[in-house]
Length: 229
Image (cartoon, rainbow, N blue to C red):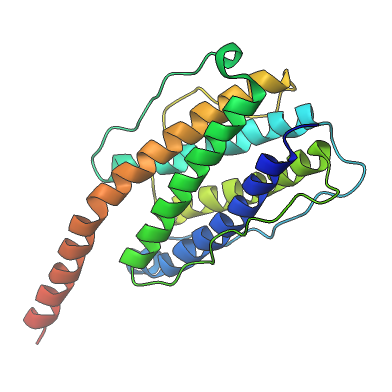
């Protein structure tokens, strides 16, 4: 029972990221409509866990699946921009332990959350407030892991809806399971770390291409307007 603070930090971060991703998906529905997409982005409602909570091993295994879906959406966007999706190596969990891996996950989450806020700002949209540094209170690791799994399920569903609305091709990668398999907690956390690392690297690649994309889009639109009778 030693990781409640970092788990609470992750919970707050996911809540903020979920709000930003909803804003991005809703804003880019106009692009989907412009290109005649048959489906628009529709956010999924967050469903908080209720007692009895799953074991933290079950919640972590569930989080592995959702994290893979989220990372695949970033990879698909990288491919849309003509880039090569990232593929970082897995860490040896024995060298870092649970505390070290959670610290890395929190760092990757923080960096990617900042990139997402920067992307929204580049589109001219406002962003959600930064996550607050609240204490975990009486929440146990079991409860916090259940909340983490719930937020990641919501973000994963939104990522899938976003990819469909934007006609992004899913990654051909077959590294993530399609359903949760309960594994030792350290194994699941190591997989989450690797996946968050991958998603963060891809988010940085997207941010590096976005200013050119926005410039070309704006000026192409301006040229079309100028040529209209």
